[in-house]
Length: 294
Image 1 (cartoon, one colour):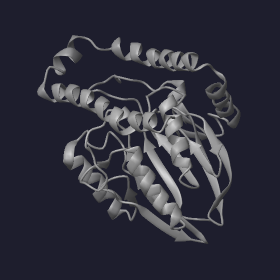
Image 2 (image 1 turned 45 degrees about the horizontal axis):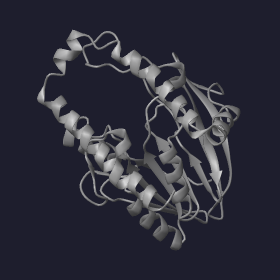
Image 3 (image 1 turned 90 degrees about the vertical axis):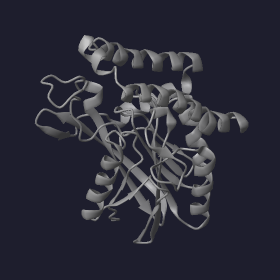
């Protein structure tokens, strides 16, 4: 058994409360004796029971983040494929098994994008690794890629309805069944190699977390089969349709009060950031994929 207390900060919500929220999160983790990574270029390395694990994390511009910076600077590590490849290869060459946290993708969609699939293949070639994704808030497929294991999204674990303002009596967004159903990924590592993994279904119930109810191995395999058997256009259309269900629900709740509350400089800044993030995504992700003919 390998015990590791480490958590990734590579999350696009880290700067929702500015520098203060970012610093408070780090402070609370450090006071609790929990190592953090995914920010400021930090990599956590753990040696135990013959295993040598290197934890790295990045935040992708597909999530429209705040506070993303070049790896090593103050803030969240931006996901630059070229930079990630160099770090993971160096770790693998030194005998470390990479544990990679990637904050990427589109919310409320059970299928990763074609870009994400291609990027995971690139990273897996740098040596054996465990890739686990977050941001979609719903589960996505798990697959073996050679000696590596890729879990595109672990979905939600401890999560609640979302309120636009702390004084609101009704939630802006309620958890859907897809948000409530997820899984725990258990990976067995022996001699620094991934020997096995299992899925434990979980469900966010009204009274707490329910074990044994949720996303099963069969469900994940079904999604994985669709990923590789569907025509690319049909696959992307399916992803857009799933996304549109959530978008329509969210827009339906944007009344006059919501509009007036968003007529502030902060939201103008967010709109500009959204535009810039899209351009950075092309630079750090899409351009790398195209340059390497993937």
